[in-house]
Image 1 (cartoon, rainbow, N blue to C red):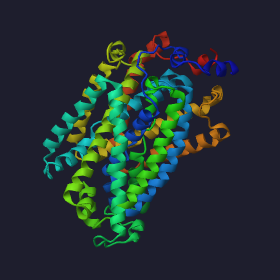
Image 2: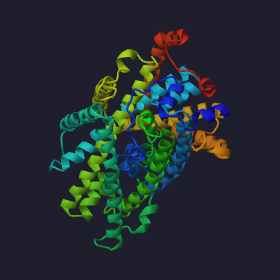
Image 3: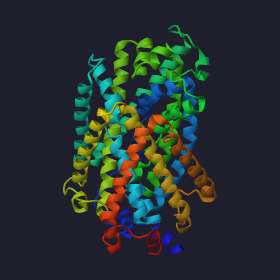
Image 4: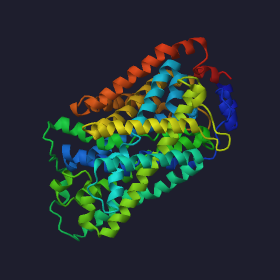
Length: 493
């Protein structure tokens, strides 16, 4: 293993790829702040809080915000595992690559499939459920028809596809800007409300005691209400590992990807909770906030002048747009990674890189269309939130559990790379805690009856993945025309 350490130290990014059996097809341009912006904006405390705050209030009341901190601790532990894995296998395809090389290509296929499912299910949910109604409110359309919301959502979904086709750098600039809009649109907004509440600029009926108020409107058993309210953090504080999906386009990926992941998760936990405190103490009426799909508009319109509300909403909408941009980029890179290993139908087609832009255009376009179709499917369901958000929330935890299981078995085969992030003697307890936490999260997001349809989406998708595996992929793997070499073969180079 000492030979591995010597070979890795100081080797070029292209040499790292060469060791793993690939050539440098994608263009390396992303520095630390761009990668941080990707992780931070894909977590998107703005999107997650605006989308799930009402559900948390309805189930466990304002006290549900304290669950954010509990989820935050669990996700920081996951981020530690992701950060260390990102130094060992810095490749596009992140979870697929990690799982395939640590366990085997069959295992990697299922993990990679779950990654694609996560990005596909949630692709249009953000704008369909919150982003488009907020955007339309900027133009005075406060009660839009469902068809109008769907039409605007589908039009918006085309823009991230185009941006990513033109250049990953252009997409990265959008997400770098989103770091500012996330902070202004959510954190500054929440702090301003906290200040106005503290100065008693308007009557506030609840006081600080509202932070322990567990009065929801769903009237379920306490444990059940807490589980449903936990979606506030579990839906939001995920996706940070997608910075690792762009590792082949990162400069000094082994240092910058782990730093980006850890800073993004830690910053999101802290800043998100500060914002939640401000939003919650400023609630003017629990009934009015819990009975609307856009509770923050009710809160903002009570405390702030109309023009300032519109400014904050504009920042929020841009933040939501940015997550669509980075989501499209990460999805296309995962498709590209699977296709270049011949793991997908029409792999040669999906693995094409545009000669001028050096982006996976085919993957961007085809899966952009699939995202649109899934958004239409979600729109046609009786409860779009449970269908799209429920499924989007559970899938990341399935991925976290599977990659951590893989790493638990094979971490010993990967010695620390000098100067790279390393858990050292804390690795075993961290891995054990991540396994326990992710398993608990999976149960919380699958057992409640409210998430039955999203459970069905996961099960049906798993059946489809198995059909492809048994009908075609297994033969490719047996013939050696698909898949990747195990991590041991790299360690021996």
